[in-house]
Image (tube, rainbow, N blue to C red; front, side, top):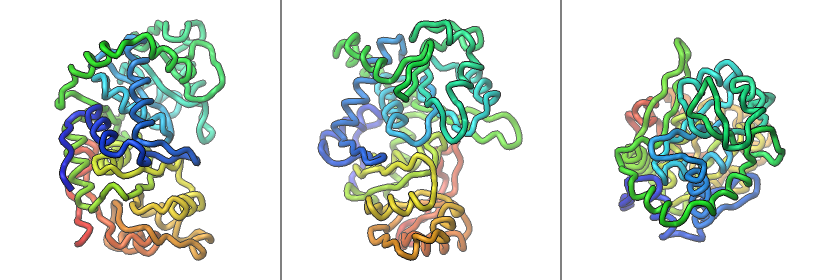
Length: 349
């Protein structure tokens, strides 16, 4: 496939949208986003972020599971030269406080609760001034740069924007101002900071640039022979490089669709793989084994599955191919510092 011309995420979204405006870009819980819809929402959020004072080089932190808002925020930040910071949804309150102190974001986009963790409560614990602040007017001793906290849920909380309320500020930014912000973005600018697991020390914030994310993502997709007709299933977290620096740019640079699963559960995964006719598997060996051993697997037909990416030993690959039927499955070796990739096998190996 011909590589995209774009070397910034904002331009890439425009390029794919121009070629396939009404094709599906994103599927989540029955919602179907076209490329045109994704572009429009990213533009609106970019304008809203500018209205809150976010500028090139500022950081926009995302504490979300796999939801459309994660992807929209990444593109919106990238369009104006801001840097999206992925924060693990496994973070404890103490770990979240450390990450906010280290990352120094201007805006934090979060979810109220997820899988038993009260993330918004943890934010209030780390930033006690939030409860007394007006939305968008936060002044924090711990993170002086942090001006706004945004919650994607519908409930109202002290000091916190609802996402819809923040989007309402998009009208404060003119098209001229948005165009000026976009024109200042360089392919060498940082577009994301992803944190390593910190298994032996505190996590390390790894910086990734627009050009590297796009060029590496396209190359990974080429190894899998991806194309516009492909549909990539993703339950691996977007805050991990395997998600946002590997799977996402691989499918976007090839104009395919991404089918998001908020968090992995094998029965739901099987239903998504079958109902959405996913052709690309992105997952680990333990996920494949859970799918293989699930009682619904014997009844399921994953006829569309063709390729994908995993990490593991040869026996892990063989088991994954048996579990999901991806006969052109590729194996990757990589690290966050190398954009989630050092070496990738070919679909025809």
